[in-house]
Image (cartoon, rainbow, N blue to C red; front, side):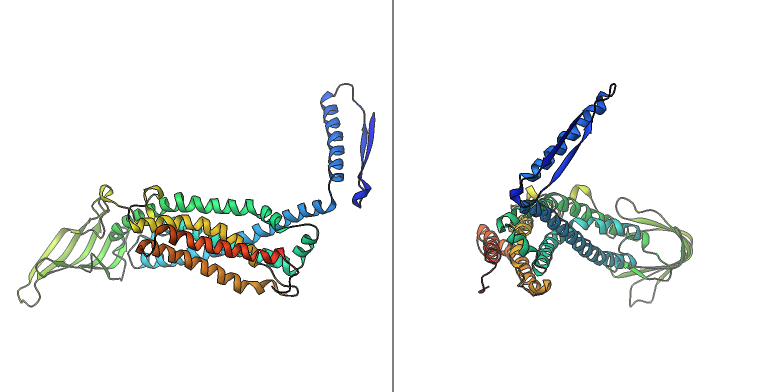
Length: 417
């Protein structure tokens, strides 16, 4: 049988006491005995570790977890809101294209989701800035951060607390900009091209005129049933200013071929062909007629060249436009890091001020920084100044501005702020 009592050192202003419950070794339960001994030893060590630290250190450790939880909650809420808004905008845009017959309706959601990485690489840095500003300004307004500063919290230690989260977010943005977004954009371009090439499948909706092939082909149908059409009308512009007009009581369409074309098998109709201004049109009645509609957009994989945003990061750099795209991809992770430093400094709120009092200045810094990196990309593309100068000037300037704003936290009692 064994027992022990551990008492915290009284010099720290508090006492803690833990009694180890007497335990006796059973005759045939070695495993339970070992567990009991390990529990007794760990309990004693835990109390001794608490006694070895100042109470302020314990409170600061709890405060670190509290700040991280508040920051994560704000960041997640903002990301969810802005992402849904941006995706809703894309959903509306592509739905309108589908309604107009420019895209198959079943492709809309897949195309919208391919836009998600492009949305996130912009939303995440902005939400990181706003989340830091809101969380810290609220702690300033409620005097919670002031209390932590009185317990020994320093600006450098606050930066150390927040550094892992900010670096993790910046790393995620870098992965998006360098790898995920270019790949998704390349797939998006190909999906859009294929979908537009298949738009002829939706070129016949009841009661709607549909124009494609640069307006040279216009179609109309009274009703549809799967691939079966009724009361079909087609007008097509032919070479040498000839016009072709077809009306059929019924028709059946085929799937789009690899070339982007599709066939229509018409029955019980009439065909009119003429040249405007002439009075001798060619009229033909038919029982069955097969025609081929031209491709709206053709996609040949061997000739396909991805858009600049869909190019792999390590293949960029030959032209000024490619260097501008490369610097833009590098700028977004830096925007996340420097913006976080700027948000920490600008989040200070004077006593008795509302937590939102600092937001106008914070938003001004955020917009100015974003416009500056956008302008630096344009400078690179237009070769206004050397690439390294246009790229580095913006980030260094806002890095110095962010470092200067941290002096507000380092001098909390200075009335000249």
